[in-house]
Length: 446
Image (cartoon, rainbow, N blue to C red; front, side, top):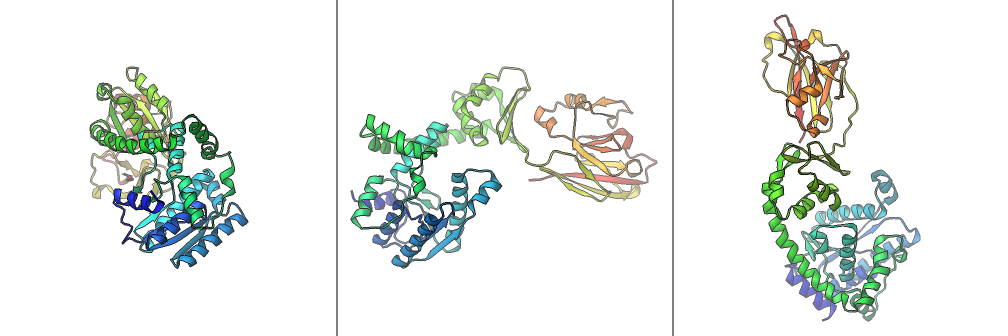
């Protein structure tokens, strides 16, 4: 089967309309994308060329850009280009070169596609890229989605060469006398993907010379299995993962009764940064005492009495914040506090936990807003000046560990005024002697 026929066959199988839709081609200057441009041209498609210059290889990067521009002129198609300060982006986001380039590239490409009326964005990924992707995912640890590799069509992103091998692309390139540029970094084995390409894949091919064709067939099977599994997973997820506010509660009894509990729990927690070993530890802890915690960079799972509780870790500031005056507004990660004052005669006091009504004359500014600490105590409203540790109050209220850790304390002159969102202190309550009221309203973000 010729390369052109393979592209047309793949497009038909995945309902990709190449005959009438405009396509924006991401062209790096390498052989694969240069071949894809020629394929589009020979198929009579309406396309444009977009090139990203990451400015990482000096004169080489400039040469790549020049070739992309030349090809756009050759095919008489629209041309778009951008220069990225990739190293600055890496430093700011604290990510690798590969991650930085991918994020910058796809964000810009999709913006250009949408802004200029292109229906699809096309990349030149081929069969060998897909094989390397699956092996990479398998090595680092993946769910079933990682085993099916890249898809020929994912929304507006298409990969027309995904059924073609690197060898087939090279034959087409030579037959059509195409000029392309070789990225020198492709030869370096300091990157994991290149190690797979230059060392692992040849070793597998030496063991099984027909491995590439066999792998291509398996990818189609894995894709079908992934679709079947996803339908089953979503059906289970509706009953098992219960959204409560910003947290997710997983009933332990239901989880224990689930035959596929390991794979389902792993599939759900993997996007939060948890690995298979951590999932095994969670399952082993289901019958243990409450309080055990499991952490990833993005989230925490707490084993409570009846639930596993998943909480995304806050990115905001957990230090002390001052409220300077009675009309101040402070914003934290997840909520804000708005202060205001009113005469006692104009104040209607409700019972909302998110609202604090305080005697303004008893409060001394600035107020201090801080996370609670072990040893904190206050005089809970309604308990007639009976002293109580905050930790004991939490226990009486049956707050879970992750809920306790999210609690903020409001202080006036080193005395607790309000456990924010819970209860005020008796010493600052509004009484029949109050003239002015300080009202503080908590608002949840999102």
